[in-house]
Each structure stands twice: as C-alpha cells, then as structure tokens.
Length: 131
Image (cartoon, rainbow, N blue to C red; front, side):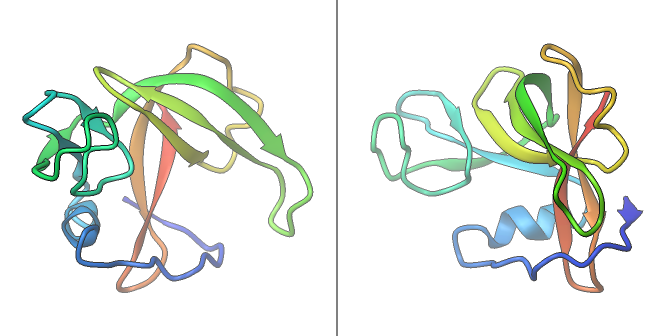
C-alpha cells in the first residue's frame, strides 16, 4: 500500500460498504456474489443488480482484469491522471482512477490490478495499477 500526497475526499462508508472498506485497509479487494444467479457485481450492494435477489454474499477477488476503455483528465491541479473501465476477470466492469504516472502507458487490453493507497489515517482509496 502506497501513501499518497494528494488530497482526496473522505470515503463515504455505510453499512452496505463497511466490510469492503475494512477489507481494503488490509489490501483485500471484495466483491458481492449472488447465489441465485451466481454472478459477481460491482459496486458492492446487497441487492443483486442482475436478478434483483437480496441475498448476495461477500467474496474476495484478485482485483485483476484488463482495461476496457480509458481517458486522461488533463485539467487538474495535481496534473493529468487516467480514468477508465476495467473488466475484472470473471466479472463486472469497475470505473476507476489509474495510479498517477500511468497516462502514457494506458492501452485497451492491458492487464491491471485493483490496489488501495492510504489517503489518511482512517481511509484508503481504490486505484488501478498496471499488472
């Protein structure tokens, strides 16, 4: 886990996402799986967005995937940064910010891994890094 010097907003946690953020502090990327349709989904929530059953369960995921699409935000007080969708292995798409310094290396199809950087004593932030 890397400590970042940028200022990020405080992570908004609630009962549905508490386990995700607690696990993130340990470097674990968690998703929810629906036992009814057996699909994993992102953003973690108890109601399955695919079959609408309300019995999803937490599952650790490798956080690995590949870049589906991306863009560079150039008008930023901290310099350019990448945003994009990553298709997780075996599952859904995650809209995520790429780690700083990767904008010249981003390509559709490149392998990535979800990582967490410490943004304060109490919070971590989700990023994608190139694998």
